Length: 206
Image (tube, rainbow, N blue to C red; front, side, top):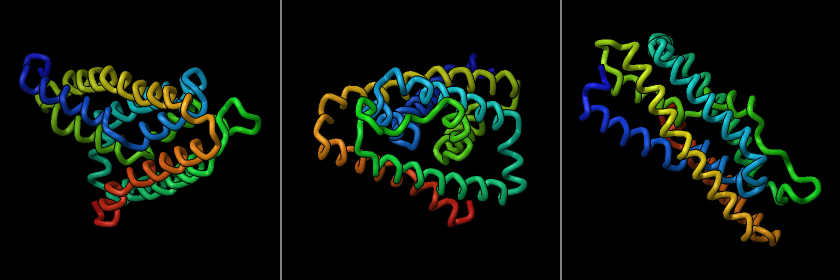
């Protein structure tokens, strides 16, 4: 079992941390949510990301990755749908110019919306498939996949929380409309740019 292989376990922990803490669609959106709406209002978004990621890990571990390998068109359809939705969210963030404390401010992503976004997130697919194919040996596969799912989730949660809290810390600097607008445009651009690697793979037919 994976739990008895310290070298593989250590490599997986490093992979999970780097994958979780580096910029990506979820982290960019959570930072923007924390900055615009505060920590409490962003908690459903955070919970949705965490739960959606766990469900995707379970699905990939149960064989969804093999289904996509057999029918790559399914993966491409989901990938293009995710790209379109991601660009919509990037535009929504970039065009926002109001903090949650101001009348007319948009609402943060809800729990169900955040859960539903995970299958459309190319980085999450890469994280889940990479974890299961690289760090869950076929011997005692179900036990290894369970360890990967549980440990990856435990590592991912504080990482996404850190991005949200960092966004909350930025609120004190966003009182001026011009600064807030520049911040949101920057976050929208970051979210759109995070899509580039996934788009390159889609165009290449991967």
